[in-house]
Length: 625
Image (tube, rainbow, N blue to C red; front, side, top):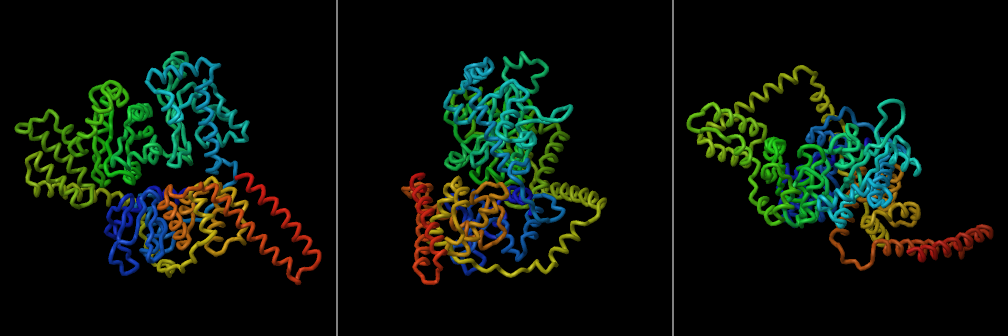
């Protein structure tokens, strides 16, 4: 299976939208609930975790991710579920093929790229404190001029890239990372002439971009004015944003989301800004639920991600011409995303950092709370300067612009309410506007049909073949026995602290585990390690295609989430205790074997030597933890 393709599809859809397309869902705390379609459910007993993108029905003891839901709902195999979700996401899949393992150290290995990016990001962070270089002082002075203090510099891990063509490349080389890895992780660029690689960022203030697990996955750099004067034409643009890599896609990542997530949930809204320093300035002033786009406009994918945490998204735009132009582009997101999208355009020629610095947090939050939704904002911009009584052409053109956008949206109460607002604003009968919207939608469909006639209709043939295949109506998978006892304590500790997993893969003997389910889960961890992937529950869910095993993972995740901070001992302490008890149990079994008459004298001696070695290991384990 192509892991990257599967992850791309999984991240492009929202499990709440997929389940909500066929079942009536309701919010319940941080999750959603619905009546389970697989048993006579009189009260909602299926839980949907939007953050983890998983589902679970406790009475049925079934659950998994978005793929397993579609497989069970439609009675199809994994490839068919993959195709179904890819179509929903608008992702083309030519053929479902088996995946490939990647070698540790290769530029295709995600774990290698994550390690390389962390090394570079940490180095840049420390370079900013270098007392020996004048450029680092210039960078510190610039931060001070923007009123970014040391606390926020550390919070966002802001750093400095030396004015060198090979600082990062050499750093990675000294740590056994190849030039290809330096390029693949986004720290280096290919030379314009000849072979080899050069640093991507030189003489810049560095802003590492983190994923939701707080791992650096990309870098962004801002030119420092004093260094720019020295470099002249060689300085490059004011900002350099990290390019797309296996770790980073601009349309799927937001700067600062890993820090803002809890505040976004708490406040029920998120403010989306345009730059790194805007986010840092907002956090410094006490405005916490803030993120920034990364060199791109706000996308549908961004909105889907943010919807997992809040129902209200406020797009905060600079008060320049470019900011106003971007404000005009977001209405389609508002129409199609089922989210309360607001647009705040700041006063002329000011950005969030400047405005907050000059006016303070309270005034800024007052502007945010009164921000119009995207429809009102578009209408205001569209009708500026129009004489409604005398300029019929301009009014008609504005109406057609709005209806053309609404024509792309599916029918529903949301669009109906927008049509009423349009009718009120332009003083038209809503029936007349609806007729025009229908006509515009039909025109768009006709254009799409003409385009489709140019290419063969392979997609429809392929879909028919898949639906008629023997795999299309597969039997419901058999249940696996639950993970209990010591095995359950083991995996709870690993899910709570994924950093323990690598050691567990090496230390745990599958024979120690009590159930086939636990052994399968350990095997999945081993498979993840071979792939070079992150050893955590979410990644396990993304690669496993066995439905019952997915259910076991979701069950353990739910137990860990429900327990929260109620456990006094750390996961590392509990893991050490579990490991010791496993080894004691193994030793007791071995002692019983020594006492049996079936062992030959030489076998008895070998077993006693093994017991002595394991006793030493157990003592070392106690010392370590």
